[in-house]
Length: 291
Ligand code: CAA
Image (cartoon, rainbow, N blue to C red; front, side):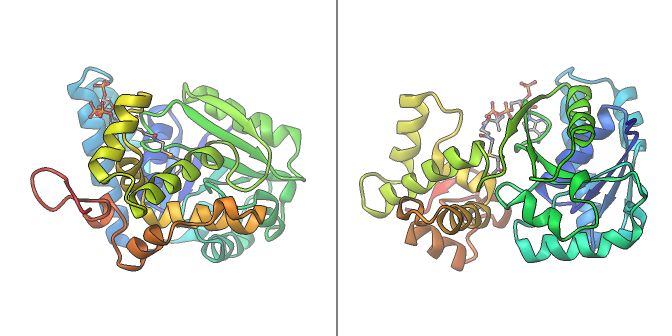
């Protein structure tokens, strides 16, 4: 199947990155959000990130202008239904994703492939709420989308081979690499990464180290580009906690219990970089550890 147009539902951190790389790969992108300010912010972020790529010689000003011109925005979810491939990238909450798929379903073209950028929720369960479980799958990007090489492709129990092949071809066209994961809680990357972050929060909670020593230990001792607490702030502490809940409930194993300190930060609204406070305080010139 020839995919030319991409609908992206949700213009947050992941949605704007997905629109960015799709437009650069030559797809026409329709970016949807219920909030007009979120759409305006997303376009401004894409413009800034592409400009950074121009400055670093990764793209030309002409290619940037052409990519920006391929991105259109809409507040009407019905418009998105006519695109060839839809990537839902809303908040990591199952009831929100279900609502989106329910409101999209009556407007879908017969050939449209539906996908979710969920980082942990069952693809089979999400697919079951739509009219096309065989044309539904997980299409999971890593953050920051323009930089990270991997896309996880997750088949639900009903996903058919042409749908998988079409999504794989899109990943190839992006110049990224696909890894296939089975549909179990949090798939591959987050099954391993988020419990590591949760363990780092336990180390902080139990006083094994402070924010700086834990991050430094993993950066210099394990060659990670970011320490686990810095990475948690980057991903969003609400997302990290939501994924731990999915693992804990979905696998029913106490080894996945979320650290109470992670829960406390989320309850405080300290969600990391996006709210300017998490394990670090980002309100000044330099990030300052909060513990
Ligand atoms: N858009 C475009 N380019 C970007 C960018 C963005 N949003 N953010 C960074 N870049 C580019 C920079 O322009 C730079 O390009 P060059 O190499 O050409 O100079 C390059 O990325 C490196 O950026 P910086 O020099 O500014 O910063 P850095 O060297 O500290 O790297 C980083 C930043 C790439 C984010 C690095 O710290 C890193 O790899 N961190 C770990 C990221 C990670 O683990 N992501 C996965 C999170 S898990 C996930 O996403 C799954 C989930 O479901 C939760």
